Image 1 (cartoon, one colour):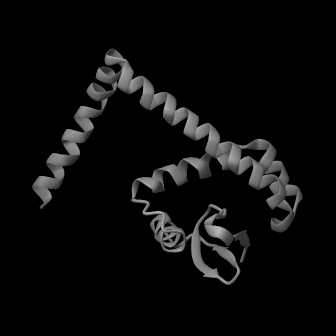
Image 2 (cartoon, helix red, strand yellow):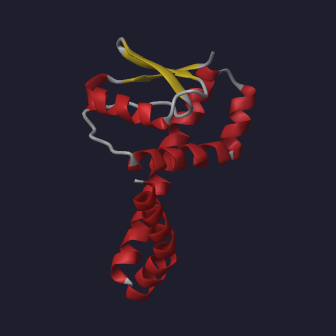
Length: 142
């Protein structure tokens, strides 16, 4: 069983991303890796520990960060060559880089969608059929 730790002192800390099954806070936040627990449990635990008030939409963000980290080839090489504890030294700065990149990408998207009517219309027209279909299905199933 693999394990990662992140200090949770003064209300701030990092949580290793992955499949999470167990948490404990003892002065450190320990995260045990497994494929059983959904990201919603991670969100619930973050909310409990940090008063973050994150909703289900945070799961998508966490999945994006996790996917970006998995796709990082330099980090993959470090994972192959190091223990989990030593891997932390490369993981933590790469994690922060991934967060910054995703935030910048989202800001760029939201700013463009708000400021550019043609862009906004294109995205809305693209999303409308799927949103419509899913809402109709949920009404029919209810």
